[in-house]
Structure formats: C-alpha cells, structure tokens
Length: 119
Image (tube, rainbow, N blue to C red; front, side, top):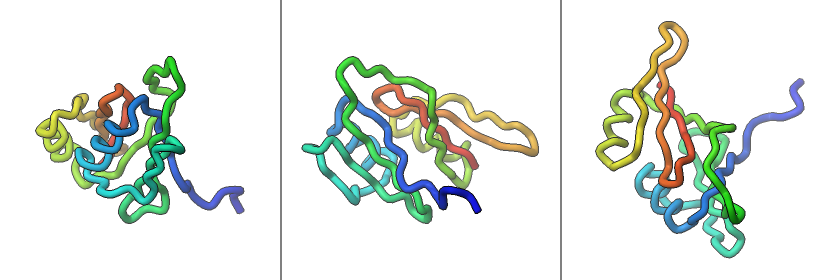
C-alpha cells in the first residue's frame, strides 16, 4: 500500500493575489474559490472531477518565476484549448505530440509561471 492516497492541493506562488484571482478564477474559468483568504496569502479552487485543488499563495519578496515544478491540467483537446487560451490573451507554446504517448502544451500565468495541459 502506498504512503499517500492522493494529492490534496498544489500551490503556486504569485506576487499579486488579486491578479492571480482574476487569471485563475476568470481567464482559466475555475470560478469562485473555495477559500479566499488574502490576509493569509491563500486562494484555493476545487478542480472539477478531481480530488486535488489548486491554490495560489503570496510569494516572498524577490520571487522570480521558475519551472522546477509544472502543474499539468487534463483537457479534452490541447489544440482546441490552446486556441481558446490564445483568444483570451494567454501566452501559449505550440502543442507537442509524442506519438502513442502524449499530446501537451505549455502556457503561462501573468507572472511567467509555466503550466501545462494534456489531452
């Protein structure tokens, strides 16, 4: 039996909670957060159909975006979703397909943090 059952929440550091609330809540259409605690530096959204949640937390002074950890979202079709995100002004890389393995696309939040989608 594994030590852990599932992922509860994945947190992304951001320098601006208000802008993160707009981007993740409105642009990525996560909707209203389940926790909106700006005084605690925490906003969290449930992900539809999944056990894990996504949160944003206030970054420390001097924070810089990095790509050491990447949150990967499931989508029905990467090509279609890339076009939808581009239409909303979201920076997206090209869709990459590794035949018989995976199709994915990287995209970026307003702070430069890389996110990905697969599907």
